[in-house]
Image 1 (cartoon, helix red, strand yellow):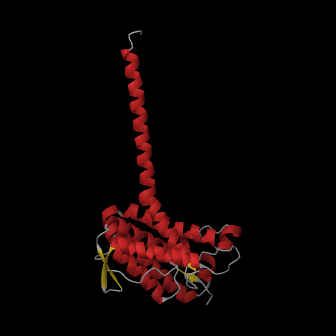
Image 2 (cartoon, rainbow, N blue to C red):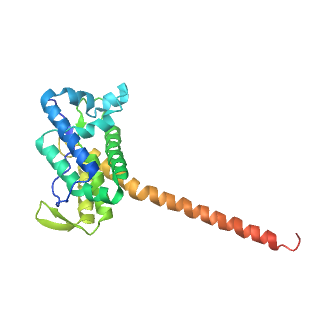
Image 3 (cartoon, rainbow, N blue to C red):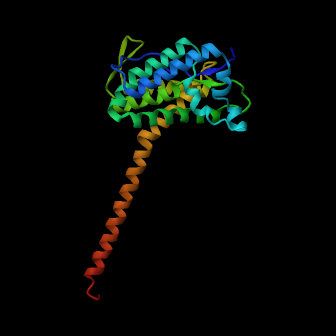
Length: 233
């Protein structure tokens, strides 16, 4: 089997209840494609794994999405699907299926973009795995339910907000220091950063623009009143 970088996302999570629609669909497709990988071998990796040279020089942009459905082994897919189930369903029930899917895929694509920007163009090894999207889901869970306890290694409870901070710092350090061979740490960081932009950055920018528009409207309204009260008119 070809060498590949897989973005393993799961180490320690709490149980997550019943399956929401999109979570169930994503898990099913990931499992089906994993079985196809087992049957057909490396052909799926070479066409649908994220290979920087293919994207930059051959225009295989679909790899920025399809790499999320490929996995590097049984434990890799188990960890990712377990994390998706534990954290994803509650978010989907809260957000709705459409918003959840948009967020999931945007975080996965964000992980692909950062991987492409930080990887040598000539590397022939595909990055695979759903963990960029899963890390985005983990971030959303920590921001939405900051004090919800998460079990580290199924033993030690910690508030979700601290869990996300610890994992985020670990992934950033691993990315900057070279990390573990065969693990796509930059994809994880990309998923986290994309999630942060979607959940915090864009809403803050929208609120700022709205405030500026309101201030401009009040200034115009004040000037209009001044003109109306001007006795020279």
